[in-house]
Amino acid sequence: VQLQACGGGLVQAGGCLRLSCAASGRTFSTYVMGWFRQAPGKEREFVTTINWNMRTTSYADSVKGRFTISRDNAKNTVYLQMNSLKPEDTAVYYCAAVSGSASYRYTKEWEYDYWGQGTQVTVSS
Image 1 (cartoon, helix red, strand yellow):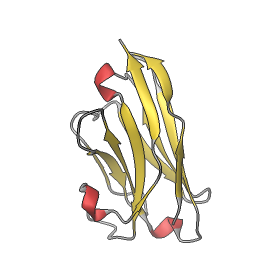
Image 2 (cartoon, helix red, strand yellow):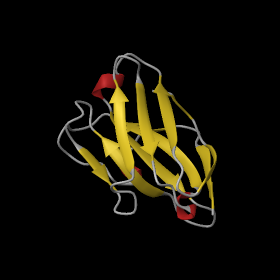
Image 3 (cartoon, helix red, strand yellow):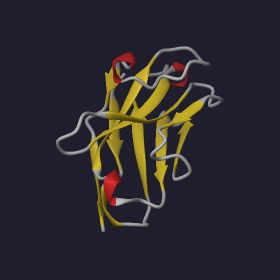
C-alpha cells in the first residue's frame, strides 16, 4: 500500500483544514487507517484512527471534539477534518495503514505497517 497525504497549509488559529490521504491498491477497504503528527522537537504522536468498516474510531484527547476522521472506500481515501485549530496543532501530519482487526483501536505508531510522506500543518496565533 502506498499512501499520499495532502491538504496541509498555513491557517490562523480557529480556522480549519481538511487533510486527505489517498491509498494505492485494491484492498484499501480492508485496512485500518490512522493519522499521526510530529511537531518540531517532539516525537510522533497518535491523532486518530478509523477501522475498515468505519464503526470504530479513536481520537487523542487533545483533538477530541475538533478533529473528525472519515474514509471513502470507493475512492481509497481517508480524510482528517480539523476544526478550531490551535497553534499547538502545528506539526507534520502523517497517514498510516495496517491490515488489522475491525474492533481493535490501533493507536500505537509501531502497530502500523505503511506510512505516507507527511503534510505540513502550520497554525498561526
